[in-house]
Length: 420
Image 1 (tube, rainbow, N blue to C red):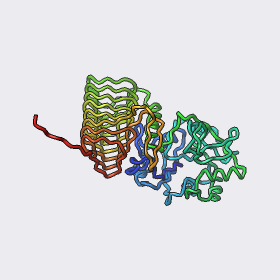
Image 2 (image 1 turned 135 degrees about the vertical axis):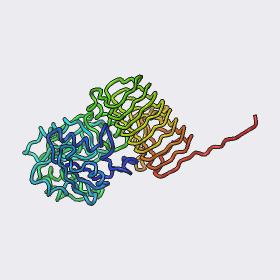
Image 3 (image 1 turned 30 degrees about the vertical axis):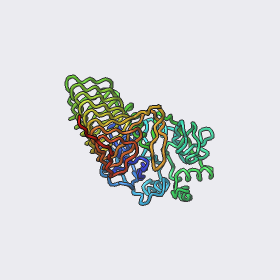
Image 4 (image 1 turned 120 degrees about the vertical axis):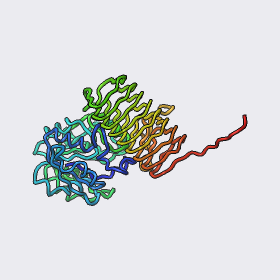
């Protein structure tokens, strides 16, 4: 069971025009990577809970046959929490134990295999615990040896610990504890609350631990880049070149260059890099590690792209620099556009999310640009900036704060003409 109903508002501007589960990462949408990991572990019957833009998910995945799995969909008619989403699937479970995966996590397939191999029907369930450097904003797992004693939601502490990794195996008896669960202060029926109720009634949950380098919670814009890195390291382990590569192109490291992609002379590619079908790169470009170009992306002469995702049908014009950034679909980035990714004092980059400045923990971080954005020539964009969909940025503009969707940003300046 994949829980894929949420809106993902913290991933704005990308979730304005798509559900977060369809954000492209390392060759495929996020949810496809989850399905592939489940399939790799012998799970081929999948229930997906949908709500926000659910029709787009159904349209992309269909009945699952193109992925060699069987998919059923359940609509969570109102977004009332994870336990509510789980309970909506009760009639499809058939009194069998089942796996639950949150639809916004990326993980190494071995994480699921470890969960399955640890499952024991003596216990009500197994829960994934992930070691992280900072437990704030997650569900903290409090354990006694191998067993869970409590889940504490979003503790106000900044320290190392084991957090809820968003993956479980349950016996169907979990549903009776969901029925006992009241709404939280957030107005949701939360699965973590149901688990805490079960523990109070002497049920046991085994905690299976995983390291942070095998798991990413895609909850904030920069997490998209972390997930992309994890998957590229996992999936790109040799040169796979089906496209056209001109003489004079240098490829260093492992890459995927799909059919109908064109790489023009003078381009230097430093893997791992993924270049999709229909892309045209060059001439004289520098494509650096952990760059993913989606279908039909064009990179003009003498551009540098580093550790970035460029979504489908976007054009990056000549002499531009894109670093540590995510750029949406159908954008037109004007010649000489520069995205800064490092502050003078080399402090970590903060990004405004839902009105609050959040520290990304990253010294190098660029911009997050929604779909259908156009920038004029010589636009400069500060680190950590978000630009909403359907925006125009006038030539020679310096973007130092977020730009809301459907905006036209221009910078006032005067030009004085004098006689010589």
